[in-house]
Structures are given as structure tokens and as C-alpha cells.
Length: 280
Image 1 (cartoon, rainbow, N blue to C red):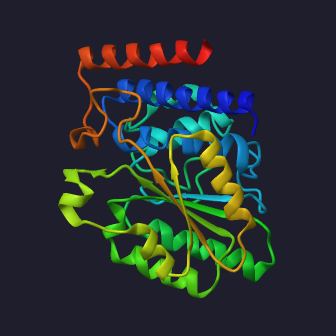
Image 2: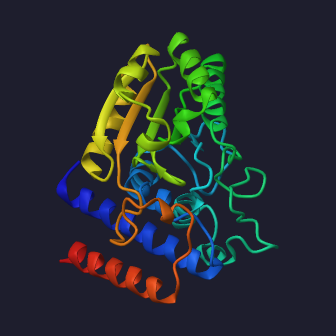
Image 3: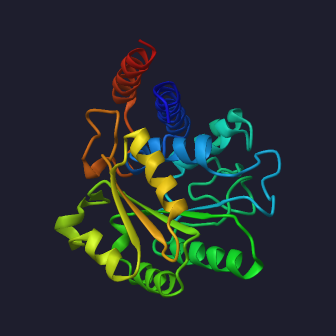
């Protein structure tokens, strides 16, 4: 990936943050912290790597995406809208009582959503099922699942991993948003998951660890996953919760807290400074 394309995707990740923050401002509700840690990952997946057709969201041969950490719709909805699955204007209705853009995405309501998620731990099992189905049907589509590092405390995650490894699901890529912070504290404080690389290897995964905000590293890791045979791949993306907003970064209270008016001004000012850096 050349420098120009890297910069284009950095700008797209920034646009996802600005769009998501505007969405939360309209709703006065939404999970910002764990969404902003995903921005670069979503930009690379949806605007560079995934084989999808926004004009045909149920296309049978599309790559599948499962947001297992289903509360992070502040990352998902802006991505789908900016990619063309539905009008960006609809983001203003986020979490309104009569809107199809609910706090957790619903596959029967939102174009581009392959699985309704929200109960942590269950999304990865669904993604494994999608990968199995592709094998059984002789399809070449790939399945991507994003899980949170706090979510790894769910036992169902490891049941899914055991099955994926035993069945050599090389069409499955799991991305761990390892921002080290969850709802009410750090992952280490609440339930330390220890050495993730060793854990996933013991379940039969090919393991790649990256800086989850580095566009090139994300791109290269996804390419490596595609080339890996006879093993599912996990990309452990080391990220920063609330990335891009200084007063939110690495703070658990910004898991689902809504900024006040003054905080919104500060957040938008910081994002504007970042935009100028990317344009410079």
C-alpha cells in the first residue's frame, strides 16, 4: 500500500470519528470510547479490503462482517453510511424511538448488517458458523469478526475459538480490539486475560499482533490472514479507547458516557486540528 492510499484511509478513519461524534451529539447517547478505537480498522476493512456491494447488501458472495462487540455502532453506522449502504442523513435518527438505527444493530433493519449483536460473546460463534457455511457451500467469501478484549472473558468466545481451530477455518479472521479498557475499569483489573498471543495459538490460530491505528499494519495483517491456510487468523489490534479525543483516551468512563456541550466543543476542536494535520 503506497503512502497516498495510506493517507486517504487515515482521512477516512478521521471522517468516521467526526461522523460518529455528530451522531452521538444528535442522539445524546452512544458508545464513543470503544467505537473510536475501531476507526482505522473499519476504514481498512470497508474501504479497502472487503468484497462487498453496497447497492446489493444481501449479495450471496459478499464477505461477511460481525461486530461481536455490538454496542460499538458509533463505529459501524458511520462506516456503512459513508460506504453507501444507506443515506448519511439517516444517522441523525440514531437511537430515536422510530429509527431503524438502534443502539445495537439489527440485521433485519439495517442494510449491510450481517448479524444482530449485543449480547457479548455470541457474535464470534455466529461468525464461525458463517465461515463453516462458506466451506460447505464451496464459497470463497471471507468472514471478519471484531471482538472486544473485555468480551474475551466470555466463555462462549473460547468455545468458538476451539471449534474454529479444530476445523481449520482459514476463511475466518478475528480482530481483537485490544484497547485494554472496558465498561468500569481496565481489563487487567477486572479479569486479566493474560498472554493473548499464547492463548489463541493454543486454540490453533495464526496470530498477528499490530498497532490497531496504523493503516499499513492493519492492511498487511489482513493480507497475511488471507494467505494463511489451514488455520483461522486472529489479529490482536493494540488500540486506544477513545482515540482522537484527549480527555477520552484510555478512560473507562467514556465507554458509554455522553459529552456535555462544552466537551463536545473541545472534542470537535481536537478533531478539526487532526483534519488540518492530515490535509497538510
